[in-house]
Image (cartoon, rainbow, N blue to C red):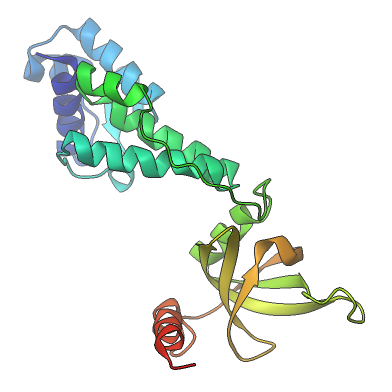
Length: 237
């Protein structure tokens, strides 16, 4: 049995237990392998980030909340996923880029040797030149605020540097991070203006994510923002 097939079947068996522990001996018997091979394959899967827990005398279990059902990709589909993940290197968010690389490593771990070697050549590149938030110091807390729906206070630098004070403080409901040309933009419901607004990350000079979660309200949610954006883009000048 090829290693990729072994790993696939091993993960499938672990998921079939629905969170119950199964011993290495039982896994070996089901797969027709030696217990030593099972130990080695489990260690490989753990090293590549799969949430497999093991306890001596009890066995192994895999977290069902963090796994996907078995899927099959063509080589071209894998190339497309890999190209998108590698593009993260240029997006000014080191944490997201690292998470993407870990995901790519997991994909490579279950590919055939020939397909894995093809990906290692890194023959598809996504050269980007983004200048906003180059260190990624804002992207990570903003992504968390979006996921958890947390009210966020922005200190925002006005485009006109001659304005008095040069900046404004406002509370927003962050909804989406998007790339527009060379800049990252935050789309949010602005409580100060009472409308959807865009904020360039390179003009945010202060950020505070609160412990207060905002509710999903009509006319202020991400679907409403996307409808508003489509209407704005297609409205006559």
